[in-house]
Structure formats: C-alpha cells, structure tokens
Image (tube, rainbow, N blue to C red):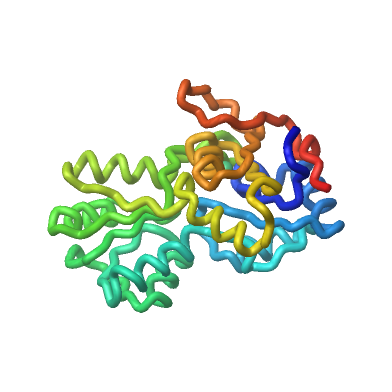
Length: 255
Ligand SMILES: [Mg+2]
C-alpha cells in the first residue's frame, strides 16, 4: 500500500504541452489540482525560457503557480557559476534567458573562442558559426556545461534534437571533453522542488514522459515516478528504475 499523494512535481515538455501546443487533459487536471491547493511544482530541463516565463504560460492556462515553483537548469547554472566559476568568460549556445543567467551570476558572455566555459541550451538561432566558435573554445580547453542530456524534445509535429544531441556533437568533435550535466537525471532540481513544497519524500511524486531523465531523477531523489505515455518512442530498458505508467494525469489521485 503506497502512502497517500500529498505533493506533485511535474515535468513540462511532453506532459503539459508538446512544443507550443497544450495537452488538454493534462492542463485540465493540473488546473483542478492547483484549484484545490495541492502542493505543485514544475521541474523542466528546458532552458529556453526563464522560470518567470514558464510560470506566466502556466498561469495563462489556468494553472496557478509562482515562478519560484518552476525549477529550470538556469538556477542550477547560476549556482555552479557562482560557486565554481566566478567571473568566467562564457560562450553561450542557447537563448536570451541563458545568457542573462550567466550575467546575473557574475560571468561575462563572450563571442569568441577565448572562453573558459561553453554553456549549451536550446538555441533556435543555432548556426555553423556558433558551432565553430564553441568547438574552438573546447579545443582551447574550455569546460563544457550542458543544461540537460536529452537527445529529443517533443514538439507539435514530432521531435526536435535537444541539448544532449549537441553534447554528442561536441564530444565527437573534441574527444576528451567531459560535459557537466545540470538538469534531470541529476536529482538536484527535484530536491529543490521538494524543499519548496515541504512535503515528505514518500508522499511526493514526480510525473514525466522520459525514463532517462524524469524517472531516473525521481529514483535518484527517492520519490515515486509516474511516466505518462505521451512519448510513443519510449523503449523499455532492462535497467529502467521501477516506476508507474499512466495514460492520463487524472489517474493520479492526490489527497
Ligand atoms: Mg518531458
């Protein structure tokens, strides 16, 4: 008999929406949970937007959540820069939110290969020039930091390559590069969410669409993992952590 569910941590991409398109059943269920005050936090590997932006989108969908309860790799990046790379020169492949985070953490965003760090996120203006510059920075000894290890992101009409695919590109081009990975499956973002929610580990669940990130992070954080079957590409692996599988969010019944 499992403990009652009192707090929910959910992924965003592939659970709440695909690309820009909300998933109606998920939105309806999350709206109902937020409406009756179920402690709710979101943990995403997506660094294309800030927590404020994501909270804005969720609130417009009727899911009441504060920016503090949306946890992205951007906060993890800021902590890492402050603690280990104070004043670093950083080459960013990623969106404006990622570049802003570097500046807020005291780093300098540079446009050349004389960088101490190369930071990777989703970049909808990715160009060969950017790939070349980052490659040269890595050849010059820069450290590679990736916001997440995901290979694919679900979008409206299928999938797009995610940050992990860029990591694969750079580790192939510059052998010996060891990336630092910030997002799930590292449990740090989930631990931060649990602290915010103030819930007991056994009464908290993590909902996600990816075993390699969401479910592994849940297992690493010691909480129950629910995989929603919105990702038709999932192929079970022998070493998948134990988790529960649901077709609809409403199958989860928080008290
Ligand atoms: Mg996802």
